[in-house]
Amino acid sequence: MRLSDGFGRTFKYLRLSVTEACNFKCSYCLPDGYRKCAGPQPLTVDELRRAATAFTELGLRKIRLTGGEPTVRKDFLEIAETIGALHGLEKLALTTNGYRLEHRAKAFFDAGISAINVSLDSLDPATFLKVTGHDRCHEVLRGIDAAFDAGFDSVKLNAVFLKGINDHELESYLQLAKDRPLSVRFIELMETGDHPAYFQRHHIPATVIAEKLEREGWTKKLKAVDAGPANEYVHPDYRGSIGLIAPYSKDFCKSCNRLRFSSMGKLHLCLFGEFGVPMRALLQSDDQVEELKARLIKAVGQKVDGHQLAAGLTGQTSNLSSIGG
Ligand code: SAM
Ligand code: SF4
View (cartoon, rainbow, N blue to C red):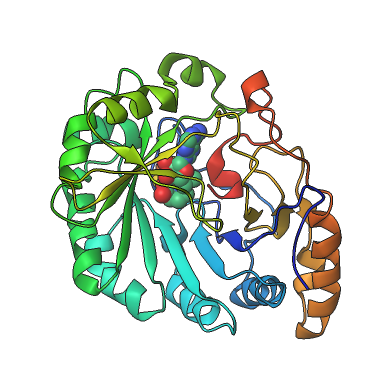
């Protein structure tokens, strides 16, 4: 049994959000910080395990823990150990803002996480503070070093490219990939329901970076069938690589191989879809896994061919922390 849709796309990759909460205040995501609302608690470890079990039994081989900030959960290591131990899972990855990573990287690695993406939107401490509300730029950089030291062979740095904020830092980011196998990934700012004006002010098309890279001798690698959303660029003088995530590009959705599951137990077929399919009622006992799998197969079969972001339709997504970026 596999998860596939009506457009010939097969799904091997799940982004599993473990919380909507976050301790940072990124200006494009949660500029006023996370505000807890009354309502259900995020999925428990057992609920997360059952969801992940159903997905792995349906052929998913890679799970990325995300949020919000996944590492703010007190039981985060237990979550990682539980999911990392599932039969059939080949890769457990983490996306984090790097908070206290310098002290925790080894524990994350020992818990079974094998790939880590660290968000770092500026290499300049003052700009980093302006974007995130935290004076932790150097700490996050030390966290990336700690991840290499801990044994991660896949360390990626994510930066949302922002006009008038960090668009003059491209060269500094490239230097980080000069002598070590770091993949620096620039994410094109996506419009979300909460921040249309921010998008108008700070959006830069990824093509601007692609053209600059190509002028400087970087070449685009052919994409593997099961690759993630980034187009990877390499250069003979650099050990690392540069990835561009260009959600507005014409063919971005064609190769979509990812699904999202929110910390409230909803399946999201697209980051910019209109609704999530509620599954929490089927996460209450181990006996429900078969029923859950059947529901997942049915829902995924209804995935539409692509998002309508270019037409300014952001779907239900108010910000990425609510679904899991
Ligand atoms: N808190 C973690 C972090 O920041 O890495 C994980 C969750 S965050 C929502 C995942 C990624 O989404 C981050 O790299 C973040 O920069 C990116 N992101 C959030 N909002 C975005 C937006 N509107 N456009 C593009 N990327 C965005
Ligand atoms: Fe938090 Fe990540 Fe959103 Fe920044 S991008 S506010 S770190 S969830």
